[in-house]
Amino acid sequence: MVTIHLDDLCVSVGPRPILNSVTATFPPGMLVGILGPNGAGKTTLVRALLGLLKPARGAVLLDGRPVAGLSRRQVARSVAYLPQGHTLHWPLSVERLVALGRLPHLAPFSAISPEDSAIIEAALEQADVAHLRGRLATELSGGERARVMLARALAVQAPVLVADEPLASLDPGHQIDVMELLAAEARAGKLVIAVLHDLTMAARFCDRLLLLDRGEVGALGPPLHVLSPARLRSVYGITARTDNTGSWPVIVPEHRLATGA
Image (cartoon, rainbow, N blue to C red; front, side, top):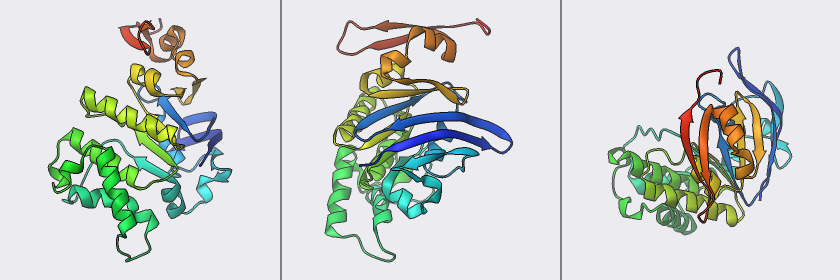
């Protein structure tokens, strides 16, 4: 199991600072939601977690080791990544695309083993895309493609799974399926980090939320602590209603505040 620690993380893209003094610890067995308005730094944080952006100050530590000092193969074995967008350039079959998740574990020019095949099959079933195995991934709908890319990330079997907007393009039923799957992966001992926009999904499924506000930590903690009416007002500029009468909280944005309100 793996713990990720952000130690006074500051990241700039070109001359522009994006993240400023972000400090947080994410232990295994937890589903962590990363929230914030557009432009708050969520995707930049994800790229820093993966070692794709070099910190201007501070560090991302993977079990105490700076990610910047690890090889790409070491990072790929430890952290599976589900990017947003799901852009595909090659007409691979769904099964072959999901099999790419095993690459970090294979020696050069080695073949897929029976164990790898079993892992690929399990990932196809988990993401509900086994029936698509023979289809070309480039011919799938946006929602189907999103689930196939999730299967590829699951096939890595890394102790950390980072998903950038995993609910984009999915219908409501599959959104619930994906969140239940991510929560199950966390309960099984993985650290799962997901960038989300749906406040109710975040409150329902996540163990902890990190709310980014203009590149800084606006709040970190249990969902209802982070998603308080006052914080939604100050960070998102909205009023929202929270309904706690059901089995989980429902957060309904109601009005956008006037600039400067």
